[in-house]
Length: 484
Image (cartoon, rainbow, N blue to C red; front, top):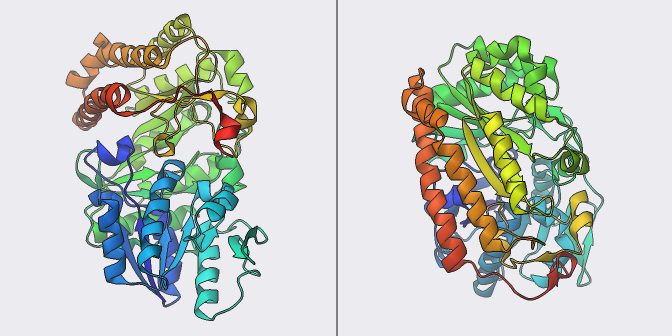
């Protein structure tokens, strides 16, 4: 079949303000098996070029594929754009099959199919095997009811087929890196870059996160297989920066160490960045030197909150003492730390922001990222807040950088001002400025300056968006009613 895979344009900060883009790993992962099965596959990365919806539709119609596959890593906030694109495609073509996938469609399949008659099929769950089976069935005109992992219509009613099993061996399906041809993906200061995964899933039950529910179980690739793939990407594609998309790559310390050692043996000059749990950094203290030797320059650490009661409530399974120790250990090994802090888990008052700032200052991270809690319907946290009112009904902005939940004690404009003040204090404190300008490692100085440059643009952009663009609702809309 002639297939066009589409990464839709996105409004999120990461897409619009960084002036750099990473390839859509999920779509490339789906493309690889389809290419190997003999199908003709092309990638249209509309997010890379920030195409208008009209231009995306025009390019689809010119290419005139048998099938279009749409998905985006920012699944919730991207869905309205996908709806608009597919609606316009269907108005001008009745022959192109329209298939979508991602985390949001996996859980909201029924409402999507009910409200969007132009969308034919939804892939629910991990896409590689399901999509391959689907495309083969379509090519052979086979019934789809027996294909696992789909949401389809039967007699005009949305139904879901039997759920597909998780992929046990992540090495079984090849990523279609060749689909990147024509795109100059960069990160970390205009260096050629890709997103990659050592593992999928997370064994921790944090209530606000849906990763453990979507991926079902934690699995990892073989150490040598991934190390070989990284070497190939470095030598054949000139990739220097590898951004790990894992929720928690080091869940199995033995397998993680094997990978680090396999990569070190390649003697490649790489830059690795990723996310990791603070307690795993503490656990791996005796071999953190391998992290650095492999090429890691920064880890994002989910700090989330200053209050131990809140951390226990959201089942974070971490401690403040280990968070601090992890940052100190990373600094000892010359690896940058980025602390992410989430506003909105509790009914914050002004003093709560003060205590949050005190905690972040005591942690002394190299970088900080403050987000807003965004409750997704499929997470346990949603059940806790489903009766709460929301202030933002534009789903395109449910991206963790916009306030969604109404706060009981503080008006939204006060919340954003307090957040912006926290960011200023954290980024301009003397020790942070000293590292920014005089860090002994030139590469890390460059990395911090790159991130600071983006941060300045984001800081002003968020204030401008809040006060002059974003339209908050003053109606009393509860979370559960919004999703009806």
